[in-house]
Image (cartoon, rainbow, N blue to C red):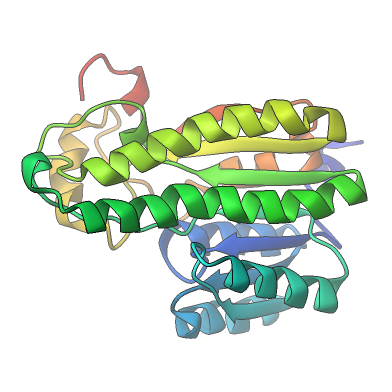
Length: 256
């Protein structure tokens, strides 16, 4: 394959959870620009529909569906509708997430459960369901969106959301173990750990977080595109179980 073929997603079908806003939206556009048909799903289907309409204007097909990733019935519906429309699923991006900020000694147990159910259990449920199809197809790419917060602790000023950090740490190790299990089936499972991008969750602390980012800035509206496309395409056919930081150098720093 030449370099253009390695990164070409023409005739591929991708599902992006949480695809209507932020990082998920950026990844959806990257895939569409590379030729893929894209299914966007989240609890707020209206924002997914807006993005779906924009992608269709680019000449690819797209579908917007409502989905709570902690609900197996919703996941089954997204998979069923995707296969009905496109016949297959080549790429899954587990991007949908939630958080709850509270001092660590005051974190309510029910909010812990909510965060873990969406961020960790949701990744497991969606990955398991889609991987069954990918194994039958003989190929597939799963990309889990974790966070630098899943790599270690944060001061309360930067991140006072222990449930979020714990859930993203779970996603990182889930990625590695799931990748090992599925490697013989030609299903690739990798993880991206974003730094601070302009999202609903990060915006309240993003200005302060820039001071801890060696590059001194937040992620742009294109910084996630290349990493996601690499892990979704044939360019990463010998890459699995890896954690790719897109963080402006935070992971390389001794203290952040």
